Amino acid sequence: MQKLKVFLVLTGYQITWLACVFGETKFSYPMLGSWVGIIFLLTYFYFNHNKKKFIKLSLLISIPGYIFDSLMVYFQIYDFESITKLGTLPLWMIVLWLSFSTLFDEILTFFKNYKFLGIILSGVLGPLTYYLGEPIGVIKIYNFQVFIILMILFWMNLMIYYLNYVVKNN
Image 1 (cartoon, one colour):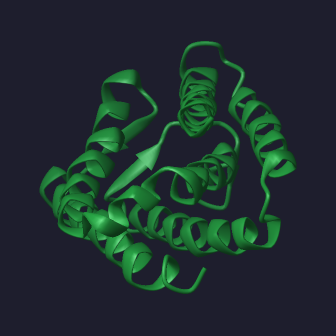
Image 2: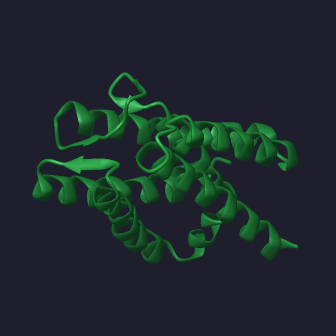
């Protein structure tokens, strides 16, 4: 049952990510990702056994991520190619960060026993995901050196924060 749950959460998040990115760039329907993400989040929340814990965790992950992205756009390190923005970010980024937090609730708890590995993978895979958005046309990176340094630092610190604070207090 646990493997099925992990598969469904990963699939739900990936479908949300794809809907956000390709809804904006390929289908000219920027709200697609928001709607898909909302459906994923409502379904996830409905089946979640500890709703209060998930809401807290989701906010503890999503808010720093959203603030980081907002600052990166504000300081012109990168920008999202989007026609539906709320402030500096695409509207779907709110849903995407909330959807991403489901991974911390169900899957990334694995790293509490492998902290170093979790931190390294976070520092590699987080920036890589953003970088791969450029050829797709969803993000424009203006300063690659600053981008890569700040992204690595942010993603490693997000994992450290998660492992040392969030996991212990949830």
